[in-house]
Image 1 (cartoon, rainbow, N blue to C red):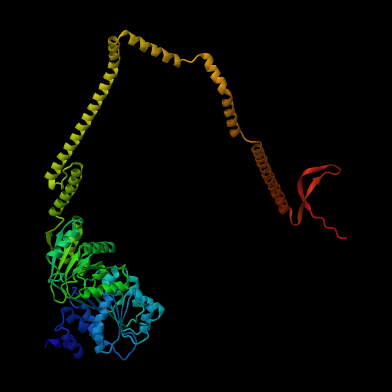
Image 2 (image 1 turned 60 degrees about the vertical axis):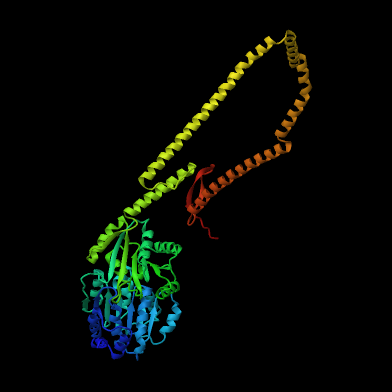
Length: 581
């Protein structure tokens, strides 16, 4: 019977029956090849496509080889990400109670004291990430000197994430007689070099297929632009709605921004990346597994080993830069014999990465134009023309919605030229009207004397004489005799002198101010003199101190004198005279 095919590989009957109850009727190719070798105690390097059951290929033999009566750690499974550690722990915990085996997951973001308390009991299998495991090793809360089996799952990703020093330190803490297993979908040269250094001659298992990626995954490339990616993604999700879909971005910032934009458009979406706390990451994964959210925007931390039932579509919003990342990303769908769809959105500048991916997976991907091909470029030009037309329409009264295409832009340009031409004509007419008004005013001013002369000629003689007498009286009142002007100046002279005196009194310094200024000046001079005196004393003191130091000891300085003559300038050292009385 099919349920006994696992028994034929060496799996116990109770485990085989439990597998059958959960729908595992026959082993996958990688399980057929790997299980007997692992049960035989050999080191194994296993390579197979994603979604082919690699986890059970090492979990089942480990469960068969562990002795539950021994309380020490007998198997260690190291994974690159927390999500993968949680997933493997759940897989082991599903079958471990059948054998009485206890398992513990140790990864960052959890309470380390709680993990330490759990480690005080009997733990047979530890599933851990490199950083937290090294933390326990340094605290000496985990002992690996009796370890039997070491598993490096997704070893290539651990090296890619820079965990090589940590992996080497973990390996050095295990006994040399251990069994080492390496499982991954890709096996670069660095992983093989690590295997040569730390493994006994391994059994290499590679499940070959016609293509590197699964045939059950339909792979499509949508050609777009960076600006048109969001619209192209929404269009793809609406045309072929997934049950659950994963959207991969290159950076955490891009993932957060895309999540916000999709949330504004009404999609049930959440994000998963390294900046989230561990509690938040677990909460997001639980909601996604329970189908409470339909789309999960994630970075490459969710591209390795993550197995969520119901993922039908994978969207590469940002194209991966190598074939290995592409293989692991699209491997989240089409698992366990199910079908899936992988859609990759590429901009013109992504042509190099697309070519590298096609070369790595050894197949040509189907390319479809989306928003971002000719259609997207036309839409961008139309939208830009529409915005310009709208601004021009605001300048005009009629306005407009903007032209679409080259014809629309040309019509808007012509309309703009008409507006400018009308404005120029209006300004010219205004200038002309102003010139005409100025000319009319000048003509009127020049015409006024002629009108007065004509009025005088038409008026009677007595009216002319009356106007002349009035003009003479006004001229007489306006004329001031010289003696009157001198009298006025003399009358105003005292007041002017008083104003000048007050002004001088305000501006001139008082006697007290003058005295204070003199004291400040004398004080400043005194301070300068004191500073010069102190400087001279310091110089003299330095000279005397130097002489004292130079003449100390067995010799001393004395003034050199002549017999009976005056003391001469200068000094010379002489022997010290000691008299004893």
